Length: 383
Ligand code: ADP
Image (cartoon, rainbow, N blue to C red; front, top):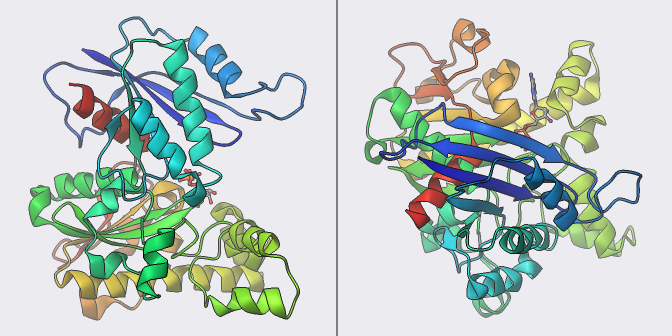
């Protein structure tokens, strides 16, 4: 048996999960891994009574409570792996330096991820540490799918490229979708829709990412809780030149005060749906904008894939909001995409199909589990 600790360090939070993985191999589609312990530490670095002063203090406190004897490895979520990392990496000084080099591309995330790795390394000397990147799954994108149509030399010099994110989620969810349909992943083309606070769509051809909606950063693509997703880049020039907004303020506007919160004042889909049910017009519009954007990506990726076997909803909204699933796929019957209302609204929580039995495209709901995917990939590196 192997014991794997998975760490996900945000700028002010630390999430951890400790897994026991039975000997004899790991089934990546196994929906029921053994979780020995898990927890979240928040408010790291905030000057409140009781708040941990930094990641080192938070992690040391968490680890003191965990049964870590015989720990096989630690798996770390790292947001940005740039073009450097196409797979998970065993951490050494060169890997740490490469993650640090990518900080300009992920200024909020990579420093916190790095802090977590450094603290775990010093607290657990001798235990292999593995970095698992959100971007790595998308390194199979073709040049046509990952290239922005701007001056090629400028793009090359500044790393302007579609990197994509949520890769661990799209990876596990596309494999679980194939397992749900009882088919080898190599034969299945899927559009995975990760709809959480952040949201992204991914076109997966035979288990390989061939298109994804997030780009250089997680700002592009779908409408999110607080991020705008796609917009005309000229909006940024306009706000800067005409409204006189400094760039940092526009950055904050598009990342923190846009999306659902910008349109309707709330970023939580549950609250938005409740407001919409009371006839709130801003909430109704936000819902329509949110669903329409998903539908546009489904159409685009269907065209890219040529043949589509499944569309899968996952993460907080995707797994729990039937109204969003129905709204996003409304009117697509002629494309073979139909949501069965009774199946869609059934109070189930496991992986399931919500399209009618003989539908050409299976519409599915599949719970994601990024921590388990990180554990699996970590063991793949150290085994
Ligand atoms: P994160 O991206 O932070 O991992 P999650 O995948 O947990 O987020 O998704 C969080 C979001 O899921 C919440 O903000 C909320 O909008 C949405 N959500 C959770 N439960 C429900 C529900 N029952 N109905 C609609 N939306 C839900």
